[in-house]
Image 1 (spheres, rainbow, N blue to C red):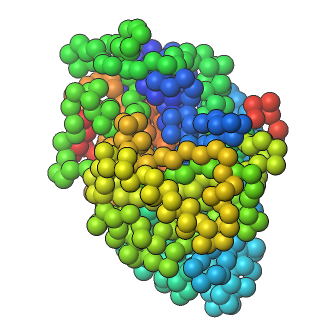
Image 2: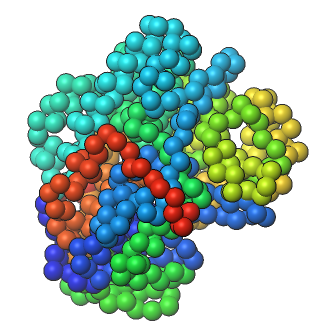
Image 3: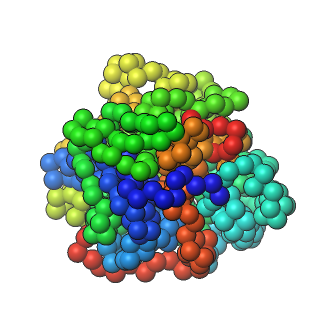
Amino acid sequence: MSRAVPSADHVVVVGAGLAGLSAACHLVGAGRRVTVVERDDAPGGRAGRIRRGGYLFDTGPTVLTMPHLADEAFRAVGTSLREHVELLPLHPAYRARFADGSSLDVHTDAHAMEAEVERFAGPREAAGYRDLRHWLTRLYHAQMRRFIDTNFDSPWQLLTPDLGRLAALGGFGRLAPRIGHHLRDERLRRVFSFQSLYAGVAPARALAAYAVIAYMDTVAGVWFPRGGMHALPRALAGAAAAAGAEFRYGSTVVRLERSGQRVTAVVTDRERIPCDAVVLTPDLPVTYRLLGRAPRRWVPLRFSPSAVVLHLGTDRTWPELAHHTLSFGRAWERTFDELTRTGELMTDPSLLITRATATDPSLAPAGRHTHYVLAPAPNTAVGPDATTWGDLAPGYRRHLLDTLEQRGLTGIGGAIEEELLVTPADWAARGHAAGTPFSAAHTLAQTGPFRPRNLVRGLENAVVAGCGTTPGVGVPTVLISGKLAAARITGPPRPGHSAHSAHSGHPVRPLPSPIAGAAHDGP
């Protein structure tokens, strides 16, 4: 594995999102002096927090999967996840509601889910689910160590026995047909394939290998931190600071000073910070602007669809809503065409509704509730641009509320006490390419060693982390990206401490706590 100045003593990490915090923990744990520079007044990045009239809204991810990956960052600084965050298991992980009026609770426990599938669609589909679960587990183990939790220096690194295992499992086929190999019921196929949208590709076109996201969501377990998802970055920042990392909040990086092929200082709007190495975690356009160069690639980067998020604080809730409810419209293929090809807003939207107060009532005033309504939307390169959203937003808000009302959330408009609407224009204003928080799509040409590399061409001591680089989008993979970036400076972790070996199949048991790229491209 190539390294960026392994002798670096003082490392500046730009950005206190999950990737930056993970990198900071691993760097401090390896004996480096670390300064974290963050433009906001608190850690979190996309996993931020907004307070409105006593309501606490998570701004990004809504659940935690693969908690052992977060635990790795804590253990790097001599503590553990369970000492800082109380994780609450979600049962069910999701509730899926369909346009025909049917409903399915998605359990991560094998026996509970098999029984639920049999109730929902009969014994043949239950048997198909058993086979699918076995396949998802094998797929995860074939991918994790060699293709996800690894630093790539060359596509030749793909040539391992695990590549053959992945091919034998059908990982290089298409996702939708592969799920259909196990399940005939179209509703069940949706439940196990919609996750590819997180990777920016429709199920019909996504690699079957991306069913690994369904493994994380439907097999490995789903948790919610007490205090909301923002409790995780707060705890990571606290652990890193206790181990010696310095945090400079409210500081925006404006440029990097260089001498030859080295970054010698990070300059903010407040100060100049000399350094021996730098880890850059902003979204790709901001990182490339700071570096003064874009990557050399055979084809331009393609970005994932975006999302409109409607945060609602209400004086009531609806009992049919679980912590997570997937509300599917009748349309399916057309929906993905609208999001990724034609650039239209969904005419028959499928929505993710998160009611965090179902698990943690402290996130709202007594007797009140939070509802986070996520509607996938075209990014600004495919659909309406950022300037257009100012006119579209009020009408689209009404459309979402009307859709929720028609799907059983009677009286939702009149129940709202606090609200916030986030559109692709807001993501663009935060510096996210194409107005999407999901960064570069996981097409074949942007996966594994073909994703933007975390080493910077032409600079000896700059490393990139975050969802735009390897391994990709999502809380688990972003935590890994921070660890991989740190390893470029410190060398790989000691044997026995990788994410692959740490995952024994048993979740981290939380306890209550007071703290509720490839050689062919690169910048």
